[in-house]
Length: 288
Image 1 (cartoon, rainbow, N blue to C red):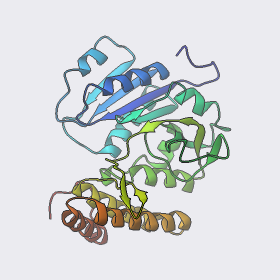
Image 2: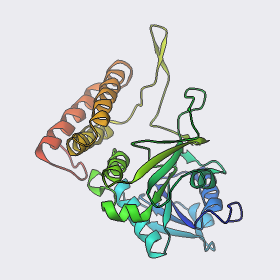
Image 3: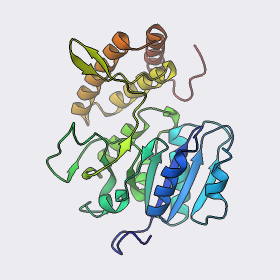
């Protein structure tokens, strides 16, 4: 990687795909330029034709099609195992909806104070105009998966990501597990990354802007079920996180009820998520 200094360790990357369009190829090229090898994990039913132009003949890229959606946790664990098998110590994890800046890897790793105690570190996702950080880097409890650099030795210690979550709160559970085992997580505010969260649309009420996520109904099932599992698991270790998550869920519910379509169906899936949490059911949602 010619753009990284000799002080930056070798690093693998992964991007998790699900029915990607050709615009994702630009993000893939950006990731390839910053990593020593890229493991593409594809949760789509079949491989998109345009991917052949990215993968074929490129020794820095490996494609792994799963033949269907196995969930984000399964895909991340597969990429982590592949990277460790290839003797990489760190893994950059990316969603297909993220646009990595040119200094993503170097900007993060050059600012982490101790790579031995690192759990993971990621960029600032919030737009800089809406959040003014006080420092270039800060310790933080949780980060989104995309843009994070994971210490694979720490990944191994905590047993990886929870693939039984399928989607939603896989990242937050992993972050809290790392902290629980004594690792440190960092957000590098000096590195900003664009990432599309849900299907955000600005709505106004009483002259104030609101940003409902517009997640589909099934996502409400997973969000509701999995966040309750995380709360129950870490309520003693991280009570502040649990308090924050309860408030965050309440705000999301209100915005969904006030602004979004299919609110009755989403509420139904919300209550089904609560029901399955109480029953101890995890994995893929298969129906009522």
